[in-house]
Image: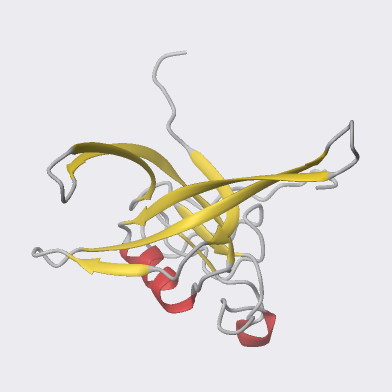
Length: 170
């Protein structure tokens, strides 16, 4: 197979409120940390164990950034789809550092809010009738209840996905 794929799909909870930074050229980036937790039961002791991974998320897409800025709060559960990018920077002590981030850009990125409103932690069925989400690269997609449920693209020139006729139980 020729080519390669750089795609990340995460479901987790925000570790902090989104932070917005503006660039001199008018662009913006929305940043937050996302925790994903793996749970299992220790076979020897029967004790429940957890392992949490933290992911730094950067949203450069204007539409997805607005959704994150307006509706996401610390603790909100989200589904997101983006790509991994590693960048180098110089820290305050003049040391060269590298960091790997999950980046949501204009195309092939998605952000779906999975839980209802809890102390401002997102929108849910009591607000617009569905968990809010946004998909980049095809417009539309706002208001789906699950990442598997695709709505036809509105504007943006994207192709609407064909409806699925199978009876897969998930």
